[in-house]
Image (cartoon, rainbow, N blue to C red; front, side, top):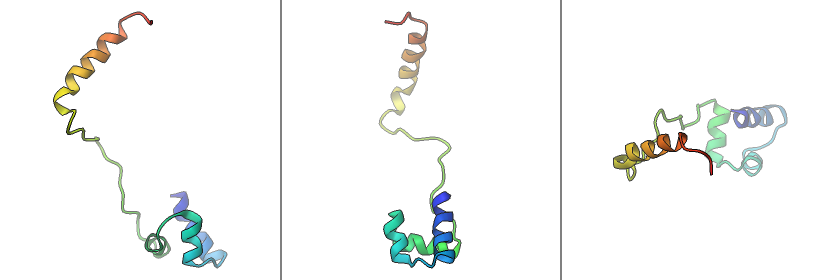
Length: 74
């Protein structure tokens, strides 16, 4: 969100154009335009990270980690 505010402040108060802001922040010009218009960013935090290759083995791995907690340190 600090990038969002930086973009809006630089555009409105310091009269930087969209190309300059794109080079400064590393975002595309389309993203800069969205920030200037006040549209929300298009990503959101996941509630749970999926692990499709590990799903059958997660219970086994968790069991190993729990059993290692009780062992003395090496």
